[in-house]
Length: 149
Image (tube, rainbow, N blue to C red; front, side, top):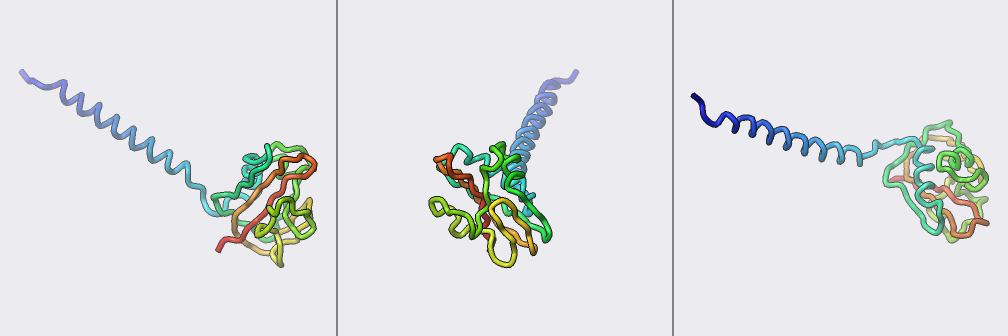
């Protein structure tokens, strides 16, 4: 006759609970990490979605990779974020810089051909995306870019 047989089952239960807890912690940590080079359109839409109520600027925590030859339209970013078409512009020299939110976040130089409504990537580059929507709906939301160093 053996005694303490229930203790073996209890040890197995404890091991399963601990393993489950470790798995949950690891999955939550992995879910928070975003791979370098995430799709720029997705990140632009996510950042714009965060600020579309207005008055706040948001800069992406993840670095995005722009590949040579990519083209983006402001309306595609607006669709991605659920913003009205025509209410998004890219930060470039021709944009009226509302509240100085384009300063340091322009799609400029030889790397981009930037116009308010469309953007062409001339050479590969990576950096962070910034989105800003002013409180006044008479001004459009702005998407900018800062090179990673």
